[in-house]
Length: 155
Image (cartoon, rainbow, N blue to C red; front, top):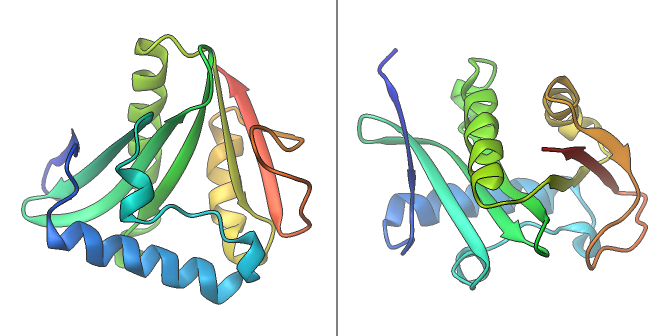
């Protein structure tokens, strides 16, 4: 397998990123009720306070992740996705480690996330648990939702 390159994508103009994110949103809409889809689209990812990374094997986009600034010490992990054909190969773990290191470097001491409670999201919940995330209550602007599973960890 080629070397994984992770880089900050400031403008999100690459059409491959748009296609990748639309697949992500389509999955979220397919498995979650409309009011429980909290994935960010391209416009939301371009907002101030959000950093977005892409991961590539050569010219192939294989993963994405974003970091949303909540306050001076707290950030939220958003838009974590690995290409379906490459899941289970450690790409998500590398992407998560990268975003956690970036969050620390930015001065954050806590990283939280929202993911689904449905079986589709079980691998994601297991990944986050392996990396020290624990279940928590809603944070930021979230409200309690039976379709959401909230997790957090100290950095």
